[in-house]
Length: 198
Ligand code: GTP
Ligand code: MG
Image 1: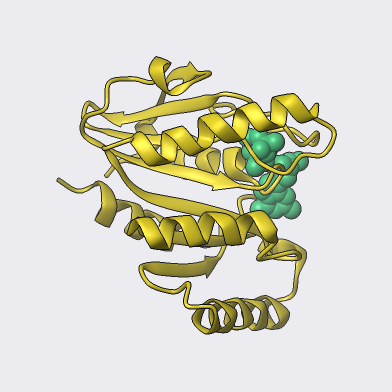
Image 2: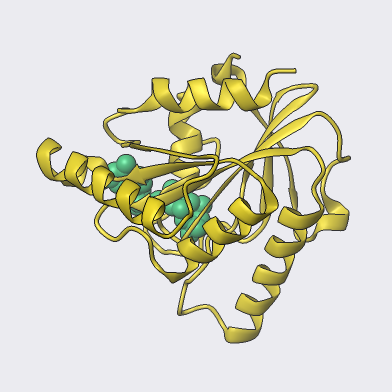
């Protein structure tokens, strides 16, 4: 698949406003500031496609990007951002849950976690939900450029081990990733290709 020619399709505040549920879709999820929008930009080589920000909570809508007529990537709002009003947080989480449960064309979830603080409470919620729903997950340990290679791969092994111990490894793969250094892009593309292929 050609990720270079991805285009912004639309933003949806709720599930009813999402594009029609057909073809194949992969969603990028993770805590606020984990680097979801940056990862999508790195894939496309266009740093302006998905809006990124130093302020967590930048992405507040479900953003759809078109790869082809039948294939899309989805940038989900981040979760766990404390400074957003409680009521708004609840609302996002409700929309997020509805999207994940009801979206028939969803083929897989890319779950991003900052490599310096992996497996936070909400990451475990998402993983548990996905594993139980039989939805495959590809974990990106992001911002790997913030660590030396040794500690980064140690973290990857530790996360792998923790998932296995908690029975959360079925259909789950993981890798280290850096949007700024563009490292790990090949591996991510291979996984996306598997999911999005007809
Ligand atoms: P929300 O939309 O708020 O949920 O955040 P997000 O997950 O989309 O994060 P975003 O891509 O906006 O990135 C958040 C911050 O992290 C920005 O300042 C990015 O420049 C930075 N960032 C993202 N990826 C990387 C990375 O691989 N390495 C480094 N060093 N910084 C990164
Ligand atoms: Mg974002």
